[in-house]
Length: 409
Image (cartoon, rainbow, N blue to C red):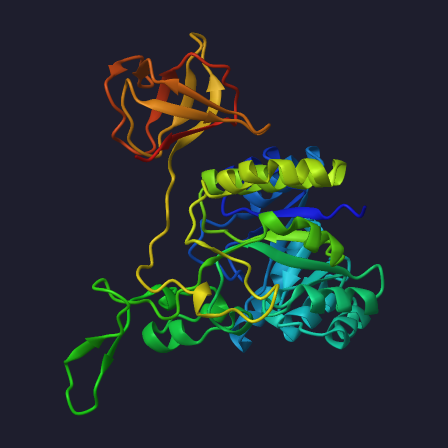
């Protein structure tokens, strides 16, 4: 059985480390420029180097995104950026969508391996062969393809041209993610990394002769969100993904928290390992995978275009909010001399609360918080201040990089 890569997003250095430790074979990230997630934390030059060193030390790869659609004013800086990536930062590949950016990278940094972004909307094998002839080593297929189409592409392209496919995460309403709504409505160009996600906004109708009278397009009293897609999830369909010959299973989410990335990485890692060991074991454990992946922040699930054209059932009409099964409390940084777990607090919790210690191996250990201390050793009843260093006393086997979370009631 061919073993696909599990590819996770990293919006920050911390999240990169979590992704790798919780099961990713590779991560993708953006620098401070030329990435389609300008509002993510993103990586400085030094953070990229540290992240790549960490990933490589753990047997994982790092891909850097430079997948904006460039304007003339972007090109001089892009040339410097590609040279810096090739000569100093040295990722395992760079991800591009724009033909000009591809040509520039090939000319000034020929040693860089190049992957073609889903934004390039590669929908057929001739397009894949075209990019391969120019030197691309991987194609991220368009979101609009079915598994049958992906399998047909795999059968008609060389073995050394890899296929990467999104299998989990948010879906864009526009063709291959190339959206003009944000630019039109608020002047922020989604194709240059500044999307404001207007597909999640609430809309109403105004009749031409009645300006100012807003008539809701409503499914119920809360209104409707006519562009708001459910999130993609293929955890229950791994056999079909394997059968299609996909080389890399990609999870969306460079804007997501460490808890989201850890949950997605761990669940898909354990499911993939089980399927490769014994498909019957994977089938047996499906209820647990479904339960765990639903613990991610999500907007209900869909299989997207994989089994045909989505219908009205793949949209969410009554709200634009995520379902949050858990609150992220923090990542364990170290264990202090008194045995307390040291973390930087992310959300409020109190002494006496029952929390979970989430471990990379699949265990979730439920324990009460026995005591909380600040960095000076002062005892606290609650932790109300984000980013405060906390020393938490709990009766559990806690290790660095375990994640602390609290189930929402």
